[in-house]
Image (cartoon, rainbow, N blue to C red):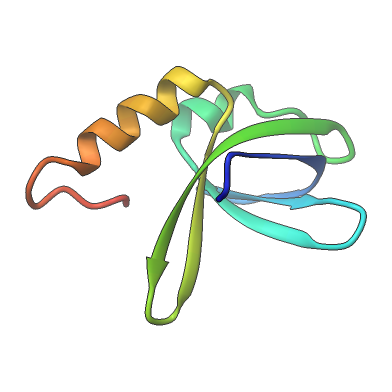
Amino acid sequence: MFERLKGVIEEIGADNVVVGTDSFSYIVNISLRTLQDIPSPGERVELFLHPVFRDSGIDLYGFDRKDDRDIFRDLLSVSKIGPK
């Protein structure tokens, strides 16, 4: 469903980025490690995604390395561990 997102960094927050594509801008939650490696606003980025579906909408979690996303998914399979 959601595998990766390629676009331009529009904004960088404390724990998220806004990535713009040709048609949409996406808010993507990112880890502190990914935040350290993220390019500056205006530069292109590719993030590996993991969506979390909630009643209020879809939260996207992004990682600059596929291995980091896979570890995140493994952690989510542990009882009482959530995405935040």
